[in-house]
Image (cartoon, rainbow, N blue to C red):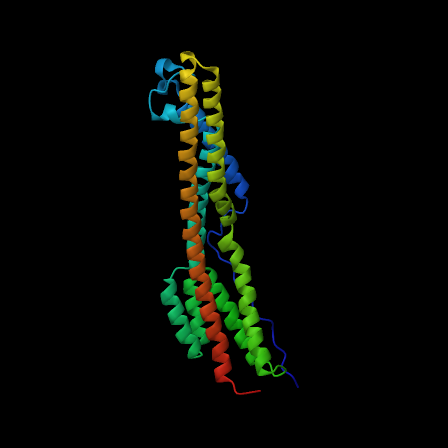
Length: 276
């Protein structure tokens, strides 16, 4: 009579910080902060000669304010990247677990090869995080198929691999969440800078077409607007690129560790069982 087995246990979800799902809230808050800094801090009358915002800037903050409303938009993008970078740092730190990833991977592989699954489970409990969740699900699948007499060896190995892949897919959204927004800001920073630059150049050419010394201030303001938006937009794209690549590399390391352990579990079953 065929042995009845239970389905593999699903991956245990992280108990720590899992990230902020409603990223639009961060965007709204950063927009308020960005335009607040632009108008109230950079646009403070003390930053202009004679205390007049429409006059000549007295310092760098006043010069940046002259970049126009696009500066507020660029600051919004910059603050959003910084906030999402902090959010991803804590989320991926939680997902990475409490033990060094390389050390955990080496230890759990040795335990699996020795078929010490109870010890591997205990190590996963100490590790916590996404990697340990996937490993526990894969070990549960190993134990499940080992007591199943209705499947052939190849089908059992396939079920172990399937359980590993399903558990990995459950964890990946937590790891990758909000990174698409950061990737979008990489492009938006440059495009917004270009938009502000074009607006500034339009103002400059309007001043030139008017002619006369009275429009020299308008010409200077247009050039300042163009250069300020170019510089701030490039800075935003630079920060966004660094944040995106840094956390993408972190996720790649976690994914590689998961693939390495998953292969070890499947290979261990294949080498230790001789049934057809």
